[in-house]
Amino acid sequence: MKTTASRIRGSEGFTLIELLIVVVIIGILAAIAIPQFASTKEKAFDAAAKSDIRNAMTAEEAYFADAQTYDPASMATGKFTTSNGIAITASSASAGGYAITASHTASPNTYYVTSGTGSATDGKIQKG
Image (cartoon, rainbow, N blue to C red; front, top):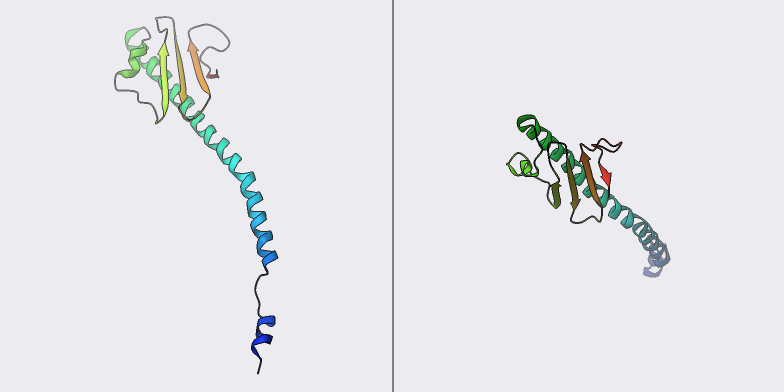
């Protein structure tokens, strides 16, 4: 029969040093992962802004098919709604083209597109 002292020395478990090493390793991994997560969120917000610009371009082109002119107010006719947190503006619309700008409130980036300029960037979404 074993005594109490021999049970303590023979019991299995983790030492304090082993537990501290595990906590330090978890802390290092968290310090690496948290900034990566923040940049992933920003990329998601930017993707939403780009998606809304594409939808706004479609709304402008649909309006143009009916009226033969572009109109920034055409996006407010109920056929186009923005994603949550997206601020979008359409300006300088005429029979020749338009300009649309979009950004997310949680992202420092702004995206824009112009159409009807005849340039190489005509109709391409750009970071501005």
